[in-house]
Image (cartoon, rainbow, N blue to C red; front, side, top):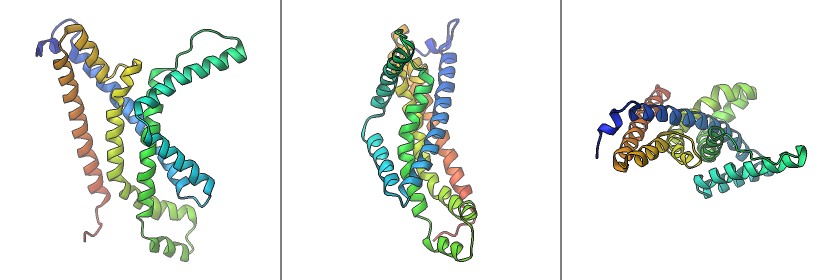
Length: 236
C-alpha cells in the first residue's frame, strides 16, 4: 500500500478523486430528483381509484425492484443505442454508430431504480396519515388543493423522510455502477489509478473512504431534517 501515489506527481490522483467525487454527487442528486418525481407520480397511481393506473404502477415497481440495477444500465445503454440506430436508419438512412450520453443514461437508470423504491415510501407515508384528519377537512368544506397543501403533503413528507434517506443512500451507491459504461466517477477513477500504478488496494481503499464520508454526511443531514420535520410533534 503506497499512499504517495495519491498525493504526488504532476497530475495528483487526489485531484482526480475530487473530480470523480463531484461527478458522483452530481449524478446522485439528479437521479434522486428523478426518483422523487417518478415516485410521487407512481405513488399517486397506486393510490388511485382507477385499476389501470394501479396495475401500471404495480408493474413498474415489481419489474424495476426485481432486476439488478446493473442490468437496467446495460439494457438502456446498449438497447437505447440500438433503437436509435434503427430509427435513424429507417427514417434518415443513417447507418453510423450512435451512442447515448453516459451522464444522461446514468441519471435515467439510477433515477428509475430510485423511483421504484420512492413509490412505496410515498404510498406508505400517505397511508400513515390518520383518515380522520382527511375526513374532518372534507367535512369542513376544504377544497382538494388546500387539503393537499395543508394536510396531505406536509404530513406525508414527514413520514416519508426516513425512507427517502434510504433511497438517497441507494442512489449514491448505485452511481458506482455507471463506471461500467465509461462515466468517470469515484469507482472509475479508482479502477484507472489501480491499473496505472498496480496499487489496487490503495485506490479502492480511497474510494471506500470517500463513499463512507459521503454516506455519513448524508445520514446526519437526513437525521437533522427528520428532527426539524418532527418539531412540535408529541412523542408517545
